[in-house]
Image (cartoon, rainbow, N blue to C red; front, side):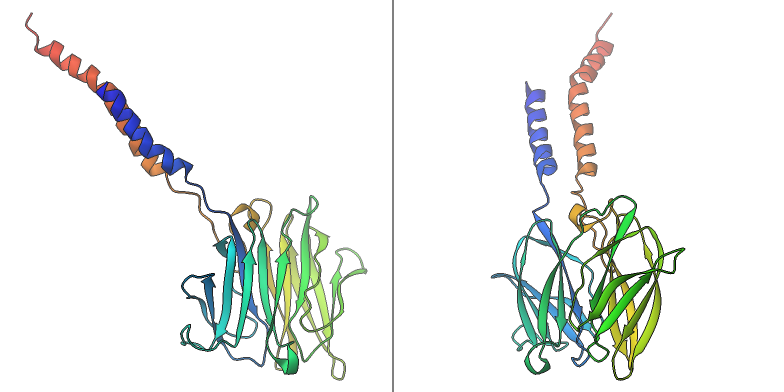
Length: 283
């Protein structure tokens, strides 16, 4: 009876560890896309909770990795580097995280008089058709707007239009493309047109954002992996984003192995005691 009671106690320790589930969560990343704004610290605070710095000295063109957050409301603030939560923010936005959803909070200078304004974009990371990946354009260049982006199709002189005269601050829809390497040609500006070409790898099951920015009067591009494929997306809690976010499974297996070993020892203890008693018994 004592052995059975001990087993029940051990199992009581085991079950809560295995039953503990990850809280419902979503993912968010932030992009600084205002060339006139200086670098900032990005602060994050859950509703009614403490403020913490998500990233320091994020400058124009920077996009943070996805951050996994429990579902709920959060305040995202951009402040001068090194300042605290009591310092007035250059921008403050409320973001409501829904379970299983990935967001990009993109900050442009599209407010009145060129003031900062946020654009919360829901990233569609559902699986594309088999053998295809997704590609879209985020237009972060105010000086060289509008921007047209065309994708050269392999083995053909034809081009697919990714964006047509996209205004500054526009996030285009995803375009499905067969897996492969593509040449994307971007043209921007009107008085002094600018042009650049970039190669982008599209993997089956992936989603990629092509970010257009400007440097010294020239168009520049950055490819951001929103989702690396069916086996690795924010919706499934694995590595994603520009730099990646991993959501680890609960690490209860080492503890489980120890507890199972203890159970085996408890089960065999009476048998071992009986064997020792038999060996000591007189003939």
